[in-house]
Image (tube, rainbow, N blue to C red):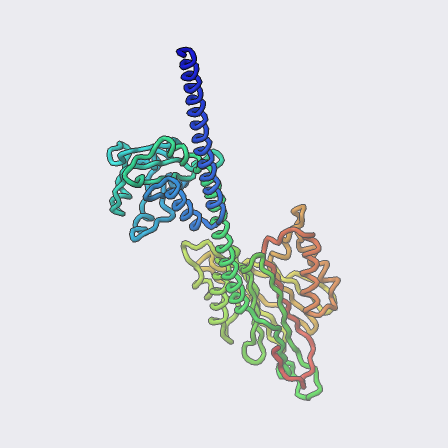
Length: 474
């Protein structure tokens, strides 16, 4: 009997041990299953949005729930400043919390960000690494806490904290392991959200800039004449009969900025009964600064020009207004006053490309004379007047260096010679045709190379005109 009882006892003991092992395995399996489900739950939550603010809320809510904690926070790393900051803080004190910045290494969160190591603390206030910056702002007592680094692709982008285990309990080592486990999918989703947020801000800024540039373009183009100008001068030509031939002047211009706005400009308008004023200029810079300088220059030119003023006197007066000691902006410029009836042309050159005169005979020549410095370079510059005569059928073509310095893919320049040859070939072209042919020829030469400078061309024709036709401005 003793032997039988001993065997039964041994069997019961073995069964008990097997049951205990089985129960332990079951509980371990349940815990692993629970942990797996929690990780799955976190993954679902953090991957449900790409918006950074929404994601931060989900991270904090999910972390608090899974860790059975009173609160949770995400503190991000500002690499440029070497600081930690709260991108999102909820509650009445949220604005104050967002103002707080911790140096890398400062406080428990700063230590975790610096070392890349997790911590479990039962009494935060007694920890030597503790910083009360946040606690004082929010008046929230921190007892226990877990803090883990958020690392993505080997780089720490922030830290995740959970504060105060509920029911005044302490966090366990298993809690820390679980938080470290969920930190990985959180960090990956957070980095994606941060990249998307940066892209959205960049796109929004780009769209805003493009909108502002479109407005700036419209404003800039509003300074320039929208249509050509035609004017006749029968009395100056000495004709009194209605069937006689009088002199006429006609203008057209073309402009194409290298960017949305640029520094090239032109203008033309009638002075008195018989004079035509015209100007073409090129500001040294590009973009918005050049456009502003151009607008000021054009306003001064139009405001100061009077019937008794010569081109040289005009440029001298405008230059005195434009010159500033600390300015790096300047503008090359060519302006002229044509007496339509006589063909007398007074002009002044402020460091600009010499225009071409295309004679009625077919000769093409550069219009040269005494040059001055560009506007805005020297405050006491005196600009000279030059004089030439335009006969009936003659044409003057002004252009900016965006034409002659246009480059192809081999960085060769279009040059004066190509322009000279084109003008000889297009002797009979009307003004609009000539402008179009010049632009097309430059583009053909560039062969797809990016336009690096603004392009502008202005044409003034002096030609015969039936004196019984009225002066017309179109």
